[in-house]
Length: 138
Image 1: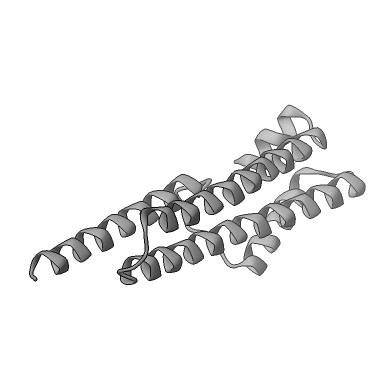
Image 2: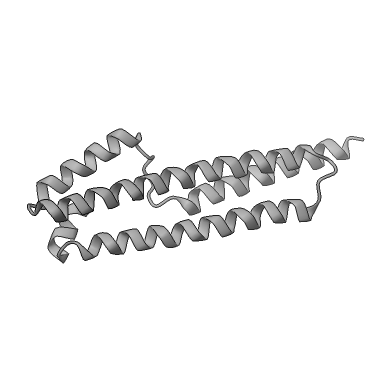
């Protein structure tokens, strides 16, 4: 009977390590995400400082908000996956296939979000020159 608790601890540890790996692999930065309103204010200020054309600045601000929302969505998705993996781990009747389905669904959703992330970044780059981009990224 002591084998089951060790096995359960091992699975819980594995799911925690996997979740940590997913969080790290999904992050675009090693810095924590700032609250949405604060991030929007910071981005708006940076854009206003470096982009004098009001139309381009407005488009960049909107794209920045889309990017911030997407990052928050990824963070939420990782938390939901963690909860699902924990629930599967607790459920002794769950199978490898159950866990694989959860991971596959998350991976599919994450890959779509990362493609959207890429598209937003390149849309932002189209709005500015290389020098402006460098200034915005500092």
